Image 1 (tube, rainbow, N blue to C red):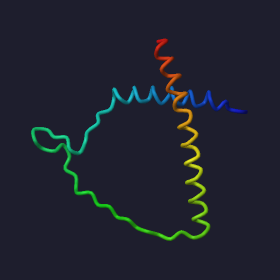
Image 2: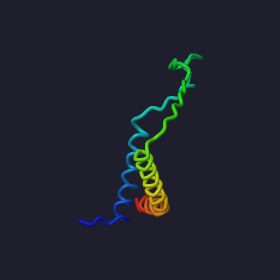
Image 3: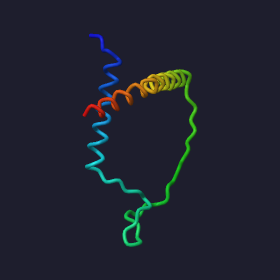
Image 4: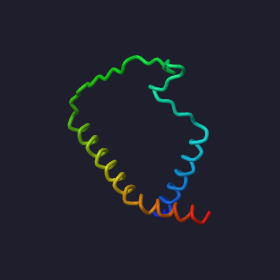
Length: 96
């Protein structure tokens, strides 16, 4: 069964928009700097960043590079459909 990619991406855009609207109404976003009566809402320890460099084997490097290239290709394709999605959503919202 062949999937019409344009139709699929359109539905992804619509679902994403609906999900954002739903989450906007049911979620509370707090920042670590938010305060209540001058006191932080959450006391977090200082952030610790550890960078561990590793050396990949030839096979691991090939797999890593292939995955990275594939990911960039997918993001590029999605970015090219972004204006289409935005235009479709705006026209749909104008009709509602």
